[in-house]
Image (cartoon, rainbow, N blue to C red; front, side, top):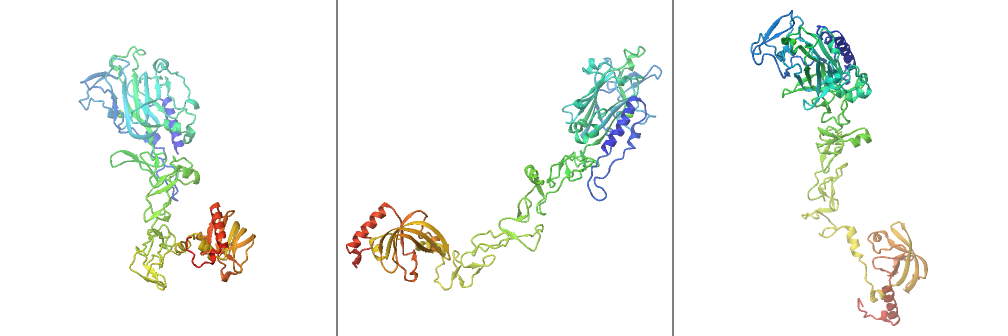
Length: 587
Ligand SMILES: [Ca+2]
């Protein structure tokens, strides 16, 4: 659509440039077909553009000079059309700047004009401020005076802070603008202003000067893909500067009172710039012109995605693709999200939800936050998909339940999802630390089994008494271990046998030593592979076939000190110490 409009306008402007006619350009606007909707009848988004029109129409033009401002002033049109008076204070004799952009009726032309100028090189400036970005197709001036020998058209894209030249016009381009008269636009200088003297075709009085922003620019047909050219046609302000008045050299009959600038129409063809995401511009509550953005875009020029549509980066709509903004997936639990470029690069989805509500959490608000669990009967998008854990303040060890099942962490003897009742065989107490106790046991709180067991097996200290009382004493090297049904089987190399009594005769060499798994878990004893230990224990009557290490067994890592002590115990045993009934503990 844009292309079509551009070319229609190019056609129209070319025509105007070569045929200085008084026809209005409005007849060309009527042929424009604009897309007034941003969605097709199936609801699919497609590129949409605000109406192409004369965007200067009825706008105020700021001018640096208007005739009759300093009192009535005589001016002459031509020697045969006669003279008149301009007086800014008298409406019937005034030629105000509003005449530049009023209805252009060829049979009743209204002209803005200056006083006749004493200095033929006096600059007069016209500025059109659009208030927002527009895509400019052409700029057209219709004269009711001699056309200036030199003038320039500029545009600003920052509300007049800086200006870019669009086109220069001069009788002597090199002298006036240091530009060649016959400049050519190529791919390398598409956004460069050229200079021409083609505006000086006769007759020099009246007629038009028109500039088309894309005429002769090689990339114009592919403007969708050319950001430089897109920027080139964009403007917030247009400035025209008349720099040199016409006539005094070429027309010997020209009188001084004929040397003024007069323009009957200043028109600018273009569209409100909305990047293909709006079909019209409207005034916002502050009275500022803004795009009526669709495709989930926002901003004055639809130049960004709306707050909740951050799943992919913003893009301009093209003829083939609306490039609409896509909503974040927040499972109906968030109103805001942000774009994460890294996630977009990795997954093709860049939306990250902010402030998940309804007790949800996660990038897509797709799970329940801590302290809540999923109601399996409801979809995650349901407002009540997450239920508070509601863990019992006395019965549970914390407030955070399992996110899937809702099970709270219960204290010993407590059960129920929220830990609000005693297990079978347990009874209630008034103690917060142990709200349920074992009915069979005493009233003391049941302690953690593992800790209790482990406390009982604190290492026994070796003494001569204990040495004497036990059935065997061996030095072993731990070679291997294996789990066998509640037992840990250690394969050891018996390196020395210090004593043995009872049925389980021990010899130097390979042997298996058995420890209950629960004792191993409590590190009683703690056997490490490839280490040497002294084991002093009993031959337990019910485990005749096995050498069992249990909680009455003394296990000490082998060392020189232990070796000396064991040697001492052996000497004492030989002296008959163990036969005495009066052995002191901790000898
Ligand atoms: Ca007019």
